[in-house]
Length: 250
Ligand code: 13P
Image 1 (cartoon, rainbow, N blue to C red):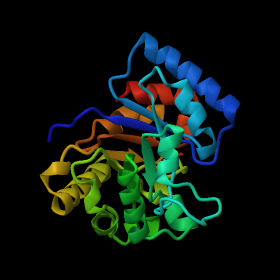
Image 2 (cartoon, protein in one colour):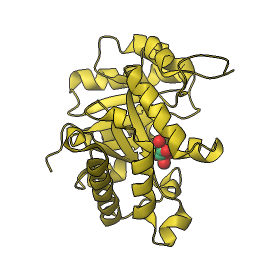
Image 3 (cartoon, rainbow, N blue to C red):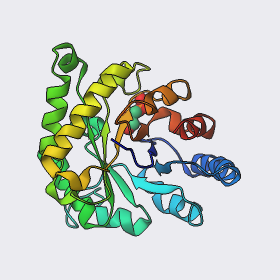
């Protein structure tokens, strides 16, 4: 299947203060002004830095994303951030269902689906994350688990909208371990098939990102795998010197 332009998104997780953001954005802008990226580039900083990032890239194609949103639009949810608030702060994207949220906060497929729907309602493009644990992979259940997550955490509301899926094997996140290229291809093909089954052809162009220990050294090979439509990058997105070669590999 023909792939549309790839999306390289940096997930900063709970890292970064204003000075870190300034340094990375300064270096990225300089490099991408000299030689524009041939892919979409996004940074998903902590919520505290979203409006600062949006201001810094106002005249630049770098996109701004949140890392999570609540499913509700507003209300008595102390500490919560809604999709509309992220949009209001300048975000265009939001990650939902990251495995750290699924594990640390007990987020279920149902909740992730509601969050993705809230994102679309607020005019944000959700990046819906799926991925198996090591135990599930070792039991030969990776494809089955990921397929179930797609069927249950992708709401019909994303049909025909700007959205992405990210396949992030839990055991590859922050570990330096990655699946083989064949394993990545197998799961990405299964994700595409499940997306088609669930949403039909209207979503055939939505990219499927790979995430989990993407580095300058492995980005080119991973991004060349069929059905890999980009990358969701954690640790290596925190420094321009690491993030740029990944952008250039797309
Ligand atoms: P690392 O790139 O640090 O492994 O993190 C991946 C990730 O969780 C991105 O969302």
